[in-house]
Image (tube, rainbow, N blue to C red; front, side, top):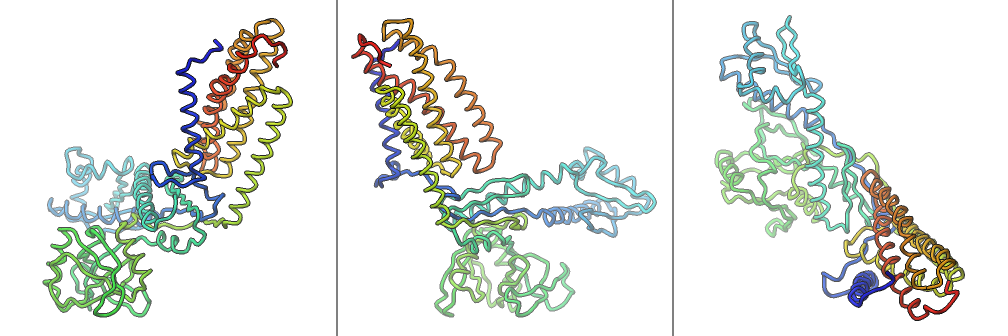
Length: 517
């Protein structure tokens, strides 16, 4: 019925005022953090940097196979079975055995009760390729195993990338998965991406190892270059500590040497290891290695049992801050390569805002004029509901602090058109009803009721399209579908509650008048 109770009127008024209030917070600043919410502008509107990162999983796969070779060696050693010629080539682990042990090893891998069986299960079907003539066992990951490694690396990398960017304090970054080995990073407002690129391009794999002067180290040694390229040193492959043992890292100014250093704090296990290593390594150089390069190699003068220390290396305060940030956020599981980057300047972003607003204003004004000319007083009612509809849409986006992009503005413009379309359907239906019904109240009520199906059908199909675009589309498409989807709900609310309420108030006072519309 064409009737609104006082409770419904109050409810509609409160809902409208609530969202209008939050929409207006984009223009005013409130002291209360809960109320001080704003719509964030996307990369294409305020400018910024776009980076597409690709994860290089090859080192991860090789590292896992290398660890597996140690597991195999130790396991079969306990069984008094010697495996020989362990090699890792092209992501395939191979080893040889004597003829008499071949069947025993095969049984160990295939026996479900064997301790080594889980490793077999993680590799491909017929995971062990056996060349019988030479008694060579070849192990490599299956396609499913590779996918699992990539998924795991991507999840870890995504979290660490987010930590590093959050530490910098970048405003509203957008960090998303792309496929199973890529990460998209959008940084609105950042027009100089060099520091971000430097931070994201470093794996930050930190290790503490002793410098050795010969190759007689039981763990083996390798020659590593200093970060500044000044010299090289032989470093033991034995890892005393890794970045996993760090609790915190902060840049500090060393008052004694008047240089910037990075102070670090170790967890309980790390402190115990560090204390033991420094107690037996007094007089030795302890190399601090980051991503395969020596940062510094101080000489151990005394036992360090406190679980804290310093990393020096001629840092500026900025480089020390960045190193501390990398160490706090943790090492990436695999190297990241930047395969695409774009920078949008703030001027271009402002041009996009201006173009979008001009399009919205022109479209809005033309719609208002058309509706007013076509439907007179009811055109004014529609225009009032249309303005409130925009406030509702902006208010909802503001509450959730959504990111508005240029396609999002297009979604708002389309919402205006859909709202007008719904009102046109209703008023044309009312005209048809007035031809056969002399009672204005009944005619208007029938017009709203009988046009409802067509309006709902049109909006529901559009909503389904918006939902599909949101879940299947990329960033800009998501922005369009989000504003369009929210706009559908605000349009239905404004048409069937706000515009209808205003129409009821007018028709009730002019129910005897002819030619209302």
